[in-house]
Structures are given as structure tokens and as C-alpha cells.
Image 1 (cartoon, rainbow over the protein chains, first blue to last red):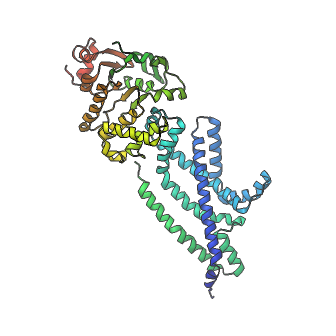
Image 2 (tube, rainbow over the protein chains, first blue to last red):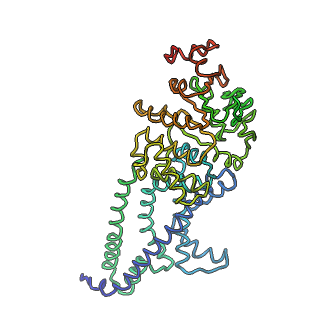
Image 3 (tube, helix red, strand yellow):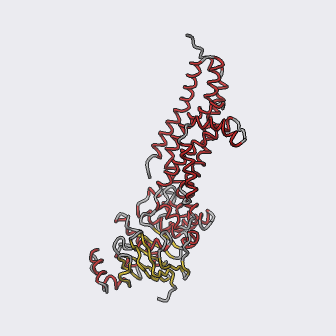
Length: 219
Length: 248
């Protein structure tokens, strides 16, 4: 059996595009999911029952559904249900964002409730509104405290972006698998894909370890 | 005393479930007066303080500030809180902000002062509590006494009409208690109206105009320190002070 590793070099431009798309997907998802997670966490902690119940339903639904199912569902069902057809990229982004927002919501909620009550009381005693207390005192501390968890979620997300290849978003996994089926260089392309994901993921994992050491201690 | 009444507590009641924390407390605090609330743990003195700025809601009676009954609503209380400074037992400085940012926070977010104005105000106050050189430090790097002095500066930054102190020295190492009490003494000398929950009897004796002894949510005895410490009229007062090792 002969190998043709040159195939990877030949397709370097497409692979680079795939990497760029993967990074773009992960970054865009995380940006949406951080805001989404905070909003959902605040809703969950609302004293209004319907608001907190709505958030709980959202979180429990999207957190406990397989992501790949969500991707397919967004691709096939959403256009029929809403009547609007989105690009594969927008659809993939939506599916990933829904899933990661649900995870982040739980993360932020844990962070917010871990800030002791005296902190909010001290801020209230200055005359701040509930919203100012949240924005100036509770959230900044909560975010710092959950940074290690967010970092871990990021690393999972980065790899999970490969799932949207099933609906044809041209990120790294899709591009690699496309080249594989055009060239029949299965082993080479799968190896290349693994090496690229690893090279991208390993520094991130190391960074996460560093964040854990740096911020993981409480107070 | 002829000075105006700043805080007027009338028959204040508060329950936590079946526990009666305040059972009809009435006190008048006049402008420039220092009132020390003493008494055993759980006697209701901290609860009274927390009711004063609405951190706990009353179950009965009322409290007035400058003759106006305090509102029950959260938004109404906000305007009242900015006129009262509160200092907590556990300091509660904001750990994610520097010392000076802690002091600036109230003026910037609540009073909408510009950052420059707020900074000037904060610098003056840090000078006053003797911590100018710590302005850019984070609270975690300060001693307990230093943190509490910053907390006092933070409360003063709102230019309150009255200061509430909830056991300000109870969480401190003995060697840093004095520096906090000195700041409080100076504040009293400047004419600040103060309500102080404390176990520091020598401070109460030296600084208070009036001492109020609490037990089981009610007032046992109140009067000038000379009366409470030297010639208590109620046997329970003698008992309590005796337990603390105070013998006149």
C-alpha cells in the first residue's frame, strides 16, 4: 500500500479555509453563547416564575439533546417551521449557539449564586439598583470565578464545530472529508485532519490549564 | 437634646418565621448624636440596623428619616439608602476593584458624578482614613483594619446624613481594632450622626452620647454611657456588663 502525503500539501489552501471557518464558527458561537448564557442565567434567577421557568425549559431542552440531532433539526425542520431558509453557516451557528448557550447559562448561574449575599447588600446599601448591583458587583466577580469552566466549554466547542459538517458548512472536517472523497486518500486525509485539530486544540487545552491555575482558586 | 431628630424608630417589629427579632423598639436619634447599640448576640441590634436601610423589611411600626416615613418599596428605599452609609462586620469591599475604585463606585454609579470628581472625592476620603498609599491596591492585599477603613471611606463617599455601623470591629484582629475605632471617633467628633452596633464597651463609653442595651428584641435600658456603665438602673444591664468583665 502506498501513501501520497503530498495530497495534503496540494490542498493546503482549502484546508486553511476550513481552519478559518472552524475558528470563525467557534468564536462566533462563543460570543453569542456568552451573552445568551448570561441572559438565560439572569432569567433563571428572576423572581418571576414564568420567566425563570421559560429559561429552565430552554436550558434543559438544549443541554440534553444530542448536538448532531440539533444540527439536523435546525437544517431540516427550522425552514419548514419558520418558513425561512438560512444558509448552512447560519443554521450551524444557530444550532451550536443554542447548545452552548444552555451550558453557559448553567455555568453563569452557578457563578452568580456563588457570590455571597453580603456583596449585593453592600452595593444595595450604596443606593444601587438591582441591575447596577448585578452589572457592577455580582457579574464581574461571577465571570472571573467561572472562567475555568468557560474555557473548558470553549475547548469542547472547538471540536464540536466538526458536527456541522453534516449539513455542509465548509469547516475543517467538511473540507477534509470532501478532499478525501475526491481523491480517495482516506488515511492521509483523516490523519491530516486529526493532526490539524490536535495542533489547534493542544495549545488551547494548555491555555485552559493555565487559566485553571490562575483563576481556579476561590478568592 | 434640642437638635433635630434624624432617625425616629416607632414600635419597630420584625419576625423571622416564629422568631421575634424586634418586639416593638422605639428610639430617637438626633443630629450629631452617636448611639451605640449593645447587647447579647441575637438580641436584635443588627436587625434594627438592617431594617433602617431596608435590607430587611419591617413587620410592624415605622422608621422615619428627617421626619419622613421610610417607604416600603425597593425603588423608594434606593433614594433613602444613598443618604445613609452602612459599614458591615465583614467589610464587603468589592474584591474585583482597586481600593480607590471601591470608594468611587457609589458616587459614579448612583450619584452619576464624573470619574474625575469621584476620584477627587475618593482621594480626600482615603487621606482621611490614612490609606492614600493603598489607593491602587486590591482589597485582598490589605489587613482587616485597613479594609474596614476603606469600607468607611466608601460609605462616606455618598456624603450620607447618618452612618450605620454593624459590628465594624468584630471580624478584626485585635491589633487592628484601634485604627478603625479611631477613624470612627474622629467621625463622631466632626459631628456625624452615627448608630453603632458594637461589642466594644470602651468605645461606647468614650464616644457614645447614648447607649441602648437590647435583649430579645426589646430595649432593656437606654441612657448616657455614665448611667449605663456606672449606675445602671436595671439589674439585667449589670448582669450583661458583668458577663463582659465590665465593672464600672
